Amino acid sequence: MTNTTAQQERTALANSAQIAATFFMGLCDANRLQIVSILLEEGEKSVGELVERLDITQPRVSAHLACLRTCGFVGCRRDGKYVYYGITDQRVRDLLRTAQSIVQDNAGRILACELVN
Image (cartoon, rainbow, N blue to C red; front, side, top):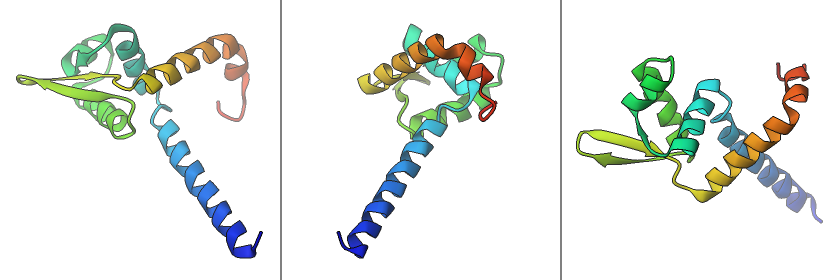
């Protein structure tokens, strides 16, 4: 392998890792995780419905939904004057269900981790 090829592979790996890290940062907020959990379990919701369920303001819910939408975790559809948000990609559903299972199995260890707490 040439020096140029090795450097290109390192750059590609670093770029891929940065994109993946940014994707997962979309979930590194407790409010966003609550939103995706509600959408996963209950289906589509409007901003108003999510505000009623969560103890956060409408602008905050909208900002979290914008982040989740930009990262590809949720999609939306308009119905009259309302916009409904939901998890539209089966791969995202699978990822979130897998993550929930891992968290349930490892909750004690996750809470004890000093690097992330």
